[in-house]
Length: 152
Image 1 (cartoon, one colour):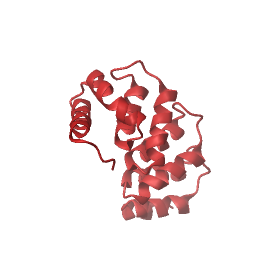
Image 2 (cartoon, helix red, strand yellow):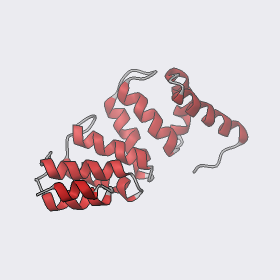
Image 3 (tube, rainbow, N blue to C red):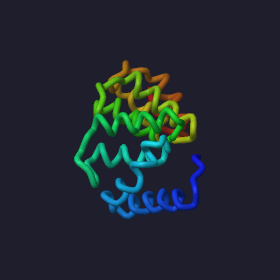
Image 4 (cartoon, rainbow, N blue to C red):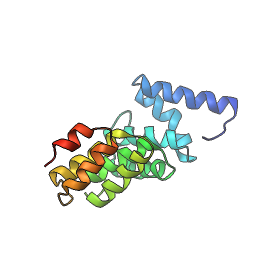
């Protein structure tokens, strides 16, 4: 977590609050400077706004770059988000290996949705070769032992 002066901390908190209140133009104005300074939380939120055109013109490529910057700093939600970008080919070329890599990093931080997504990818053979044993392992890691037991 970045250490800020009281004024900067208030601006950052106001930016997060604006984002949560769906005041995206205000959120972008407040958070973008922090994202530019490398704050992972600001980068994650700016990435979402860029990806979806919230308070700014939609720019998936810039959103992906910002999401990757946050993910590389260990921001679990950004890692999960980047995994989906690679899964769906949004702002990047679709790549199952990279999707699993980023979902795996998020899963290591306790994001069970990331582990579940990997399990589903392997179960369905969605942009990765089908591998039911890996699917079972990832469902178990996500806490879905019943689902793992259902796989033949």
